[in-house]
Image (cartoon, rainbow, N blue to C red; front, side):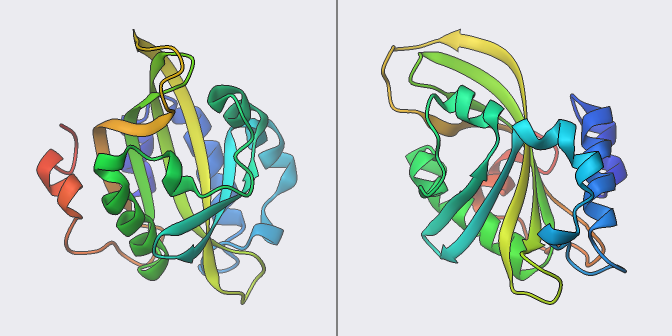
Length: 196
């Protein structure tokens, strides 16, 4: 997918266009964006729905920043915790691989999916995950995420474990200037490039 294709099918096109604009400004001549180059004036209204995670190893992706809206939806602050521990067990391995692929291949990942929260709510969310460096010239080890929360789909069991990505609707890699992988991960192949 290209940025334009993501915006065209997004449930929040104007917001994602703002995210893309900020990311592209931080790309500094076409490189992977650097966190310290993000335009803070553009970013200010987006920050409540932003995450920044660091890929430590193949089974550890640590939240370094989680915006206020992320904390409110989860019901706790995930900063310092392993993102993969919140992923539905059935898609944890695929999620880990997708995030590693985004860093290795220098591409983004766009998804629309359903989450289950401890409050019992099940909600549709939309995320754009983009590779990032901490500073220009630094390692591509960070994942900048923007997450849009859309609508409730069901009420489940109060107190059930929070699980992100219990059902995938759309999942695809995004070209940020370096192309995208030829093959999709197994979970995405089973759901198709554009949706389930």
